[in-house]
Length: 333
Image (tube, rainbow, N blue to C red; front, side, top):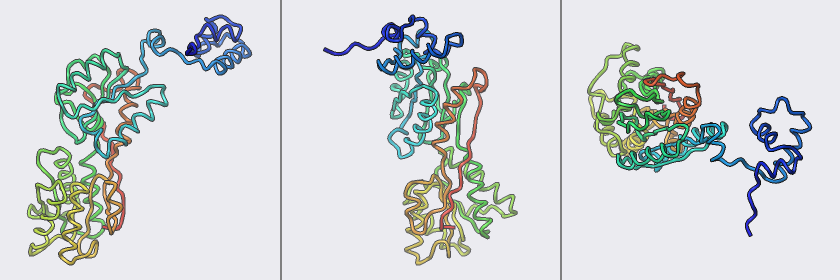
């Protein structure tokens, strides 16, 4: 026969006190209770293995100690663990657990997930996206404290935690300028990706501050995967005045650059310095190691929970909080 779960009454009997006294001790509201009595209650809890009933605790505190974590496709990406780990660590430290739902980017599943989380009366919701983008989320989320990670609400109804992509683009290009480069190309990405656009703005700001004229011939679009980086690098290196450095919109593009440089018989960083973005796990395995900007996935997830735990009203509904992308220095610059 399965053993019965210990109750407050059984703890009270073991400690020789009333159930009310046990409840006061467990809820840290026992200032008037003698220390010896509190110690007997604690020992009884340990002996019996008592754990509070979460449903009963939710009714008494109006909290379920659960945070919903909705993702589009991030849960199947290499970066998912970092965002979830950051959110989970701070949640756990504050006696809350994450309930993770991966929607695969399907709007119908997203609506169903929101309804499910509302039904469960979670204390808050985090919506995380794989690539920084604008989203239109179900209005039901207005009933729950909600914060977006790597995404922003097109109607400015929810606060957002974003990587500071413009600052990242600026830092990457500034790093190349500080290394002595003046002919700096950028493999830009695709226009519809917000992160790429912001990184290009930062790139141009760094050039402008250094008094370096922006040369459109050194910027190549349609680069998001290694093939694009390979093709664009070969094209740029055939110019009459080829670049001496390249800022790649992501590390995948940089990997394509490496292959092109190898085929051209050139060296990194002797003939061409390269800096990437994302700090993909393969970046440190390239030879030479790829200098890159790290997306702060862990910090984004942690910051989202921090905002949900903040006092009501301390984070504006349309707030946009940007976290810096650290520079990871290796040997390619």
